[in-house]
Image (cartoon, rainbow, N blue to C red; front, side, top):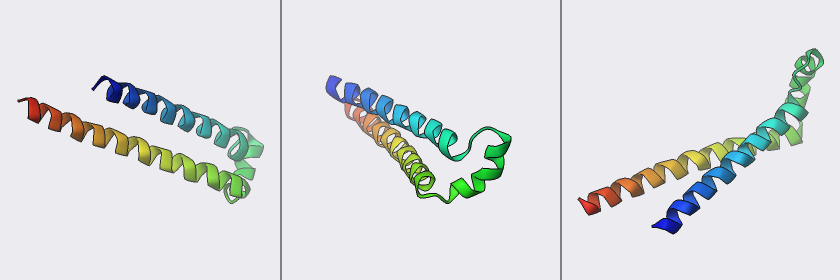
Length: 83
């Protein structure tokens, strides 16, 4: 039980850290917070790098949600088993 909790916390931290990193790289490379960035972002949005960052960011979010749903189901089944 202790190993599963440590694994969950570690995985949660890693996924959120990588997601944060991708979000910052996306802003830096694909949507700079300047007036020039505002006009160039439509061009950047179609680039393979920006599309890849967006793709991985989206899938990291899906993995994070799935991890929470599955751990919630496991927790509820554990509670049911105890009670």
